[in-house]
Length: 165
Image 1: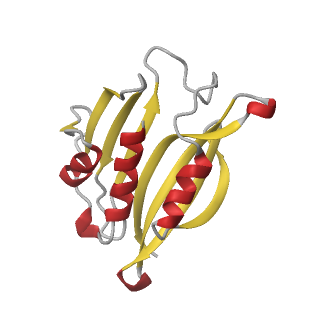
Image 2: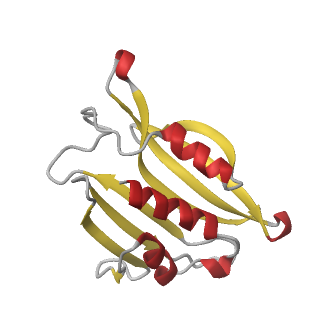
């Protein structure tokens, strides 16, 4: 996961303008080949990829029609054949949310807060670009791993987007 985390952070750092976003640039940054989705014409995907730690991940890029919004991009972590961690946290922590958030803040992203989201949470970060007229958004989708003293907030997906302010 460490290599994938580094790639995700390097991609977040590379996002300085709308021109930095494309299926090819996203796929190259993450280290995968995105292919057009047969079911959704405006989406490119790579799925059921494996990390060296034995976890799986998928990558998607969804184009948008609006000139005011940037395409939505996502890297999601999971384990094939197991329930989503938001349904059955089993002690697995793909990426500690505090560590991921601090890394984004070191890249110039500002925290926008946290809210409940899809049986977990979402932590939003934004970095102004083009003189502050636009912003790059990075969201960490989170879940609680374990209970009690060993409980941690962990990341199961990272989403990129943004657009006009």
